[in-house]
Each structure stands twice: as structure tokens, then as C-alpha cells.
Length: 100
Image: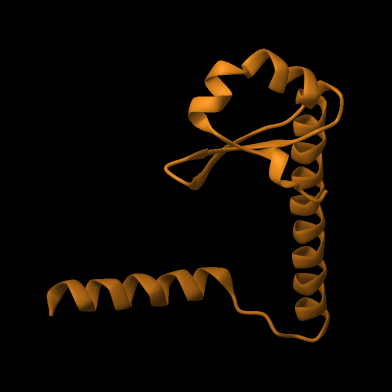
């Protein structure tokens, strides 16, 4: 969504016009509140926020599925290490560093 100049509001003005801003947001606008000339917070509709959170969860799930697929590809191509041997090697390295 593109922002216009009227969607960027100083904090002092937002305090004075919060009820009006909330009504505009409920009607579909998104507002950026600034403090000392810098972006500070945004006001968005709670349903839109829920939607953004849902999109983020879906993105995380897709990344996990992609990582699992890569892991399965590694197994299929033989790019694997024995977990017990690898953990033992890591412990030996840590112990050697601690003694040094």
C-alpha cells in the first residue's frame, strides 16, 4: 500500500486527533506516526495486523519445508554424518580449547 503525505502524522498531532485517525484506519488507511521527524509507530486495523501475522507464519512454514527438502536431498545424495561421532568430535574440540 502506498502512503501519502496525509498518512504520516507527527506524534503531537496524533495525540490530538487519535479518534479521527482510528476512524480513518478502520476505513482502510494506514497511518505512520513520527517522533522527532523519524518513523516511530504505525496504526493499522487489527484484522490487517492478524493477516500480516498469518503471512509471517506461512512464510516460516515454507522456509521450514524448504529446509526439510534440502535435508532429504542431502540424505539421498549421501551427504550425511553420523550424529554420535560428530557430537563426540565437537566435545573433544571444546575440551581442547578449554585446556589451551
